[in-house]
Amino acid sequence: MRTHSVSKLDTKLVPTFAIGDRTQYMANNFMADLSARLAKRVQLSSDGLAAYPGAVERAFGCEVDYGSIIKTFNQTRVEEQRRYSPPDVVKVEKMVVQGTPDVDLISTSYVEKQNHTLRMHCRRLSRLTNAFSKKIENFRAAVALHYAYYNFVKRHSTLRATPAMAAGVERDFWTVGDLVEVAA
Image 1 (cartoon, helix red, strand yellow):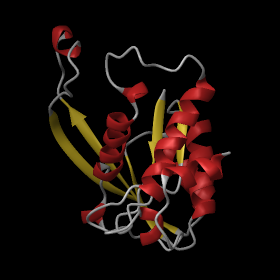
Image 2 (cartoon, rainbow, N blue to C red):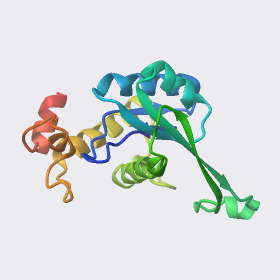
Image 3 (spheres, rainbow, N blue to C red):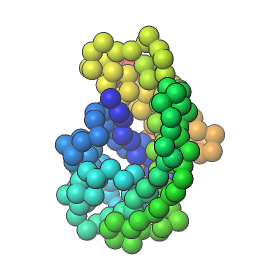
């Protein structure tokens, strides 16, 4: 199971996330949901998954600047694959896929950091854990709770606000009680 998310650089807002495999179906749903939540033209970056270019085209049409970053990793021995350390990056290639993205800003670092934050805050995603979800509905609820807390409750020191406040979606800080009340 993999989560996909997107984070806006200047607000840190995560406007959407999806839980599922890295398939064309999931890419289509994710990009359609993302495009429905954004009001302005954006620059998107993705890894080299073949499902993304078509999904971006279907969801955004020509109203997007889209680039892809392809990382080539070294071959690892079987005993090294048992560790949870990533293999060494041998080559990085940035490609313009659509529109006129700023090539210097084509990066997956923000979404990788967002996935790391999710993994650290949601015990169900910790490596080698027994705190897994037995039902996919429970897993989805845990991830949704994380992103709701991240967007509306958590004060980010660099913003001096929540991401929802920085994006103009909300005026005030929410409490955990507010979050529970809205979810009920």
